[in-house]
Length: 152
Image (tube, rainbow, N blue to C red; front, top):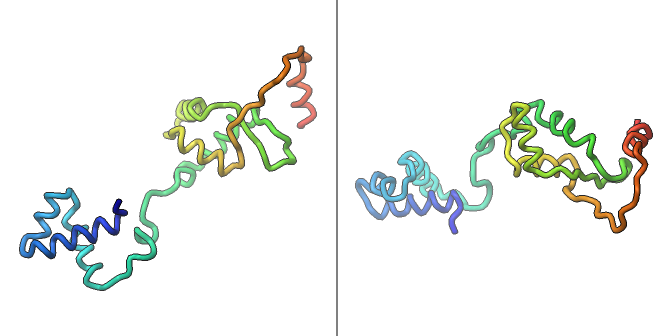
């Protein structure tokens, strides 16, 4: 399987082999832009090594958390009430699903999918898991209120 650079260089080699009009022919056959093939021809001509970055520094899109500054705060606001785990421990988790979190963030006006929600949760130190009770028992009606009181 080719990565981006290998694919460009393959297209450049084919364009060189085709001779005059090779760039246009390879562009039509592969769907690669002629300017990309020209850039690859310059790379091949310069003898640049294949190791290193595939794209120039700064290439690619900005992180969603950088372009949408309120995204992390809104995500925290959604998961804070349902955070499980010892606050002193590095292991925290939430019982809300990625799809439900993504839907709630979309309702708040963010454009985000469930996979990005998973990445952001991972960066925040959260895991997705739920406790499984082995024995059901009667809970005190104010149990949740008690823990919120203790937390604050």
